[in-house]
Every structure is written in C-alpha cells, then in structure tokens.
Length: 222
Image (tube, rainbow, N blue to C red; front, top):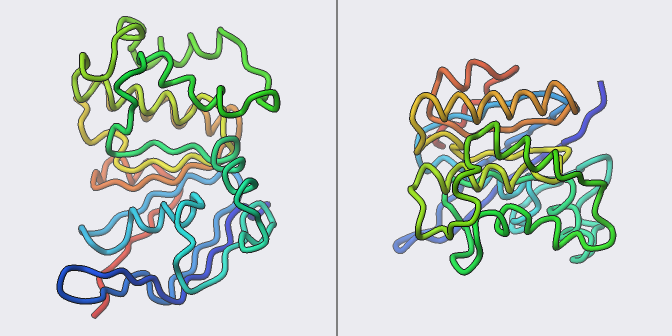
C-alpha cells in the first residue's frame, strides 16, 4: 500500500492562561492511501491540534511531516494553500460559514478559490451531494436562517465538494440526529469506497469510531 501521511511529532506546545501545555509528545502517525482512521481521546489531549497539523493549518510544532511523499517544510505558502483547497478537505465542528453568502455559495467556495486550475466538476456532482445529505431546500438560505444541524451538513458538503484525496472530519456528526448522522457517515464512506479517499475522523462516538479501519487513542501525558 502507498503511504500518504508520515508524521513524526516530538512535541507540540501552546500557552494557556496560567502555563505552557505540551501535547502530542513523541507521537508518530503513518496512514496509507484509502485508509479510514478514527481518532479518539478525552478533551484537551490534542485531537483537533493533530487535525490542524495534518491539514497544513499548523506548522508550529517540533517534528517532521511528509505528505503525499513531499516534506511539508519544503512547501511555499502558495503551495500549502493550494494543497489545502484541492487535496485536503476539512469538515469542521464549528460552522465557519460566511453569513453574507447563501448556503449554495458557501458550499461552492472551494471551486471559486481553485479558479482556472479547478478539477473537472459537474453540476450533477453538486446535486448528488446536496440530495444525499438532504439540504437542497436550504441552498438559497443564508447561515443565520438555518438550524445548527443544517449548517453542519452544509459544512460537510463544502468539505467534500472538491473530492479531496484526504478528508479531515472533526466531530462531523456531533450536532446531528440519528438519521442525518447516518447520511453523513454513509457519504463519507461512499467517497472512500468510490474514490479511495483517505478519511481521518475525530469523534467521541465509539459506534462511529468502530466503523473505521483503525482507531487511534490519544492519551493525556502523565
């Protein structure tokens, strides 16, 4: 199998109000193309920080990271931004939607950022995503007119619209009911099956975690 992620973190630190906190000490992660990985652990152990590092949003750590066979410390700012838009899809816990745009325009933002270099995209692909997760009726609404669950599904659609090689999902089903939770997970795994997309999911839901190929448990430093 082809390795897509080779990450070695010696230490990641950040400052709290009272002290400096160290997380992800001597943490190593190797992921092959097409794997489904679940990351679990109590709050504060570094799950979201790990996703930010994998997704090229955080370079402030002591370690080495090779992504798609390329050492990430050799990438320029523009290359990092292009990879984040085209190769890595983020499904975040918080909505991060732009309130002045409609849900449809929010979902299509990655296509706009890709510009003339965007991959081939067909209207039916967009329709398939919004139909599958049940948000066609809110496409012309703006985020403030939508419920938390509707916004969570819109964020998911935006994260997968470019068919990225890696999808990083941070509690993607946290605010959803059982029916919509199943819709999201089924679409996530369908992308894995059809396009060999690598899936990395942070979750507190053990039932969801157990449906992945591997579970990685982060533990607090003792």
